Length: 338
Ligand code: DP6
Image 1: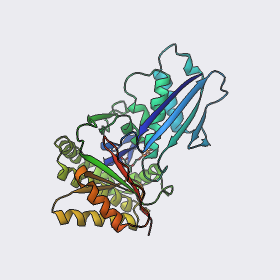
Image 2: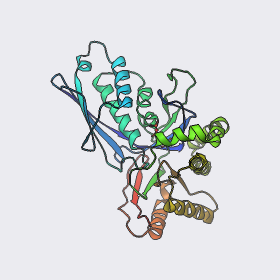
Image 3: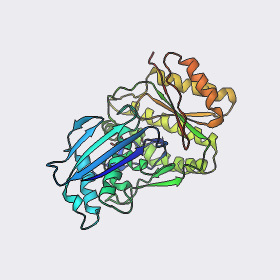
Image 4: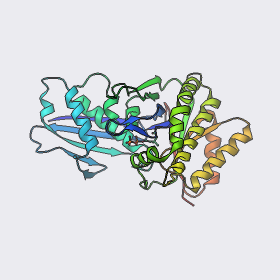
């Protein structure tokens, strides 16, 4: 038997991926940019066992057995086998996969991204696959390609029909902006009503605003935010991040029939952050929300104590202990839904 265990962190998009031009190959309508969390926090951990005695492939997610006959999983497996080192017997053996997340699954906290990145990375180790594997992780879940590298990552939409240039690359390492912190505020950890896949399919089919975003907005934003990150220009970074999150959620409303991931607590957080930034006359904190009501705040280390105190004051009911990590560290708090 051969066993590999890997961990892969969650990534949080500051320029969102929303909409595909090819569903099978998972090719996006636009580039996206993300920060990868510290792997000690908010991560998937996956163990892959291969044995000639296993009768079939099996997978357990957070202790519950799931079907291996998932087209995306099978797509990743097919590509991994094609890229495996020749003469490696292991590829003919069945595998058993156990994966667990240490954060709420499918609540808009990028669980599929970390899960698929971890699965693809682990099997790639098992099969001794060489070269880029972000294009394989992408076929599990688009955003997963951004969790293969740490630090600041760009997923290039690519232009080739076969998707071979739709890969993710790191443009700034985790040690580039050491003062940057991320605070996650868990508003609700229920499974989301519309998965990202279903939501973006509907937006692609019905939202003219999404088309405008992909054609005329994102390219410039991507260039500007990369520059801001490289120059550690928090003001520009924060403004683009908040505008991009808001545009994504506006597209959800422009979709028909519409859907909403944000709830009233999310809206209170948005107003609070703008009031806080207005008080200082400059952005001190940037919010972003994925496909769920949970907030992700970007801020600089020096501002963490005051912002944490403010959050605890406004949402006093049940605030979990604040955790502190190096890298792009994450503070994590639970907020009760009013
Ligand atoms: C809102 O990567 O989960 O988090 O490719 O269909 O699996 P699929 O979608 P997924 O979508 C993530 C959407 C997002 C924005 C982002 O992470 O860029």
